[in-house]
Amino acid sequence: MAPNKLNSSQGNTSMSCSQAENGFVNSFSLFPEKAVEEILQSAIQGSDDHLIEFSEALRTVAKALRQVAEGKASAQAEAAEWKRKFELERDRNLKFEHAEKSCLEHQADLDDMRTNSPAKNPTSCNVANGQSEKCCSRNGICSHEVLKDGAPSSDSKIVKKASFKLSWFCKDDQSDQYKHDIVSFERGNITTAQRSSKQISLKWQSCPQTVLILTKPNSVSVQILCSEMVRWLRQQKNLHIYVEPRVRVELLAESSYFNFVETWNDDEEVLMLHTKVDLVVTLGGDGTVLWAASMFKGPVPPIVPFSLGSLGFMTPFYSEHYKECLESILKGPISITLRHRLQCHVIREAAKNEYETEEPVLVLNEVTIDRGISSFLTNLECYCDDSFVTCVQGDGLILSTTSGSTAYSLAAGGSMVHPQVPGILFTPICPHSLSFRPMIFPEHVTLRVQVPFNSRSPAWASFDGKDRKQLAPGDALVCSMAPWPVPTACLDDSTNDFLRSIHEGLHWNLRKTQSFDGPRET
Image (cartoon, rainbow, N blue to C red; front, side):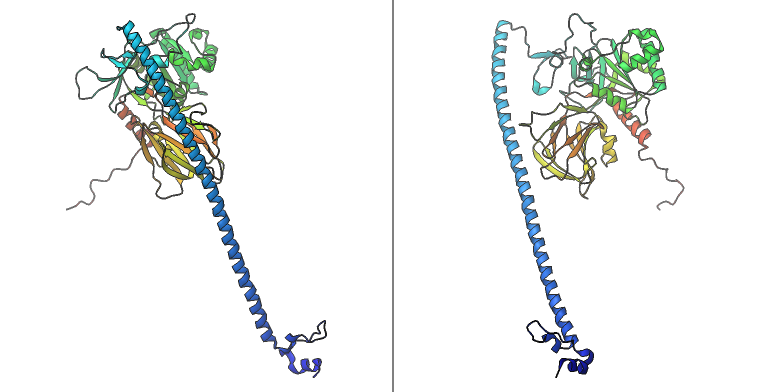
């Protein structure tokens, strides 16, 4: 039968015949159309299954390659960490050997000095009770060690600093005897060789002579109050007055009477302010107190903060009664709060050891490590005294003082802590983990936050909300408690001032009182 007759007899149940190149008829023409479609579908389905298996195999290979790359990055990071620890331990051993050698030489010199002059002992310093304690760097930094490089020259104006004594006491004690002297310095500089959880009192041993006044800028009311206070302190108390260069220009523009006001010309003079100033008065809010604290890289004079800002967690004094307040403070004794600061170092990945750091930064509130403008989560490895703490994956981390517990740390879910409690708050910012809760570390630890080598993006560190620094993979931020706290005067005492600030500033636990005439238990 011819092909055309086959097509006519089969109708739609057969395919048209096609001639192959070699003259044979295509075998598909001999099958019904439905059978051909089933064969084609099975062939296509079979090819799809092979493609799926091939794609899955490719995914498996890609996953294995990614795991190998991550393992390599992790191994490199671990090798770099072991290398850093080895170099750190080697440098530490060298330092200990050098210190031990220096101590032996120093001890030999002291023995010779005691032999020649037994009445004089250069290794002791006087304390308030008349006894002598050995002055050693292990127990803190004494005032003569801090100020030995800052002694005024013979041709400069010499204004003798006021001295004071810090002590703590119990409210139930009716006697005038102060117990357990903390610090008794001839030149009135505070270090934290010892601390107490009780209320601390400051008693002047000689009258203050020099006052530094720091003001909030761009405020007419603050400028008017500053000129009135400067005039009163000069006429009524005959004190030497220091102000910022900007404030001195404003005062001289008001009247030539303020020619007696002193200021500084460069940063070197700012570093030596603690050798001249007995008392610091701030006119502004908490930001002005932070600015005052940042000016002093070492010992900080007592600060009297007047409230002219918004919240005022650290500014208990009211400007309307500044004369009565300053009268009481200059007379003494006064209650103070020792607000601890953090000392922060940035260690770059290229550093040979942890002592090769950038210039240290002191913060009174907190240091924040965040992701900046990056869309990736931060990846931070945290250590406490070389012990691994955790890996932070989220928006960032806050290392806060207890004074800063009512600032950024509070907004991120951290606890409010009494400012006189010595500790470091460890507060995550929006962590991508339900179990990541804030922590509080003791004051004596050293915290290190490192950006790992396999981090997708760098991190950014800011110190009291300014001086942002980028932390690249391999860089680390090391924080510890600074040896010089910030003493701020109290209106009543540290506890009353703290509770008043959270009640008035935050309206803490403010709720309408439950009605007394409701249903009762029977």
